[in-house]
Amino acid sequence: MKSIPNSQKQQEAIRLHHRIDSFFDNFAIGTLLNRAGIRKIRGASPLVLLKAIFVLPFENNNFFRSIVAGNNHGFKKDAAYQLLKNPRYNWRKLLLLLAAKLVNFCDLLTDCDRKKVLIIDDSTYDRSHSKFVELLARVHDHTENRFLNGFKMLSLGWSDGATFLPLDFSMLSSANSQNRLQGITKKLDKRSIGYKRRQEAMTKATELLVPMIKRVLAAGIDASHILMDSWFAFPSVIQALSRHRPVICMLKDMPTILYRHCHTEIRLGELYKRIKKRRGKAKILASVIVETRDGLPVKIVFVRHRQKRGWLAILSTDLELSAEEIVRIYGKRWDIEVFFKMAKHYLNLEREMQLRDYDGLIGHTTIVMLRYLFLAFEQRLHDDPRTLGSLFYACSDELQDLSVLEALQRILSLALDKIRKIGVLPENIISNILDAVMSVAIDMLKPPAPSTS
Image 1 (tube, rainbow, N blue to C red):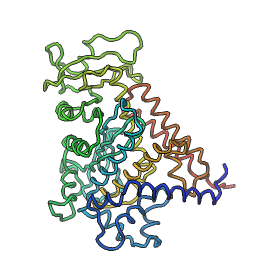
Image 2: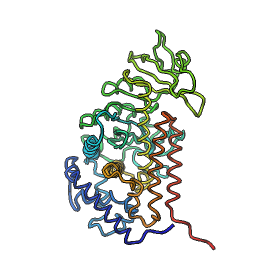
Image 3: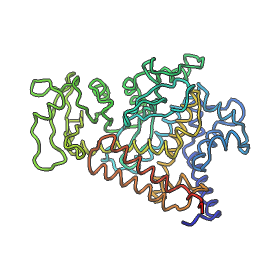
Image 4: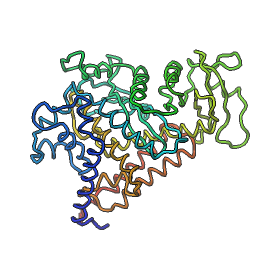
């Protein structure tokens, strides 16, 4: 495989930096920083600091080499750390302001009949090798069914089926004090953003969902439905969220959750046994309208589980939708899984810097999401075969063949298309598909090992 000439690398670097500069200028990120209370105190401006950190993965650079040990930015490492660790900075507002602008941009390119959705999910933020991180906790990774040291990143995103945009997140420790390995280590004004986010970190995830939805809707971001996995599908949560937008979610057969059908309260598995099924090898086995214990009418669609000769169930509070439409809309939920994989594998969510300060975690995670917004914008704007993957490595010394990266994005797109056509797959299978794609792609991107002969 031939390496790319230095002149071409330089041209790619110039092209990439021009796109980043245009992105910052066109969306007035300096103004958004000011609106979020992220203002210059002394030294370098927040815009300069933000951009220096923002570009690191696109240059195949890291925080230590470029910011800590480097001396070509015109500021010292302390300035970068101060940007990230300031408890008064409203990183949530910055993310939401920029995301709202991008949603408006996507709306201009989207057919008005296309369903736009809000997607709720969480993913682990692994800090297994750390001991002294503020609010570090033992958290359960439900995908791999194991406990690890770290956080749960509860995220809310928007999708129109073509573009996914992260809107908001909460970096959760644990609501159970026995699972928290570290407490709050900073003395803070209770009125500060940092104090409020720490209190939020020790709150149950289900209690944060409605406030997240309210913030997004108040920012002018609209959607037809809210999508979420079975981890959040409790009747009280569904009812609370459905007051804002109709909910579509996967269900689990749990003995404590009952549905009212023909004047009888029964669990999900018993409901499936009682209702009439479609004949043959139909993907959608049955659908039925029932009520939750709280009296909320819902439609439940049972879908064939190909891996286990069984069924999966999807609930919708929108009774007007057909069973096929419920399955189709729910398929958009997998877009957030690609976001999680991209954030971890390419945007250096977990490995870029080992911050112990909770404000620093919030600041850095926000910057990672800003990077994803940039990539999503570039992909949508240019509709270019050289999309997400190739932009990451435009300046990389290890890049050997752009076609590998083009193939990566096409594989990811194809995987999502296949998932949507199938309709529904369980969480662990989706995760395994994406992990396999990412690991193979990363191995392909690595330079060949030197010959030992």
